Image 1: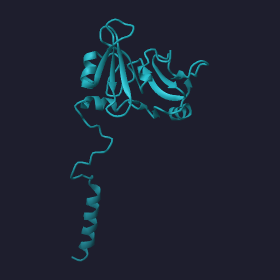
Image 2 (image 1 turned 90 degrees about the vertical axis):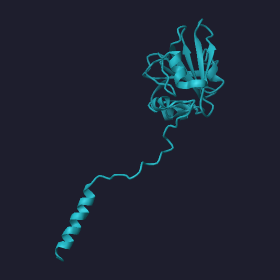
Image 3 (image 1 turned 45 degrees about the vertical axis):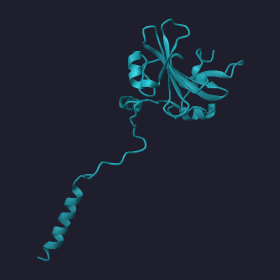
Image 4 (image 1 turned 90 degrees about the horizontal axis):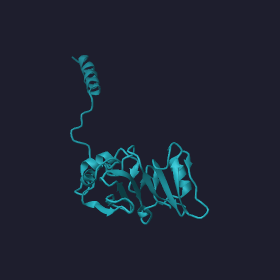
Length: 197
């Protein structure tokens, strides 16, 4: 009997190690988990998690960064430089075929806004180029403020302030209410209708 005791103990220990860990309670929520609120429904929060677009910047680039810090955070080649008579200019990624795809605005040497004109990128909160005004209003709720377009009859700017912070998202529609482009930035640059022009 005394010789069987060590064998039984080893067998029990091995059996305990071979099973998968089964938690008895759900893990606690982390600070990164999206929190639903009436002004930002869960689908928008879920969709926004898969995009580099943010209300306070783009990927690792944050509004207020100088050109050197922005370039280091970007980690790739960028095209664009300030003109002789203006402190406002755009930089675009080397891979962008045209600045209408994505452009980063700098003014006074600081990153202040980015513009997107393609459906490849998703805006903070889930909006995209090609969506209807109804879809945008469903995603962003009462935070949407509509303003008439400066140049196109029947078109609009849909301005959406960030739930927190100074960032603002602006969608631009055509006369039929379809999103044609969007940009995110901080005031006053987010409201420049012509960009740096």
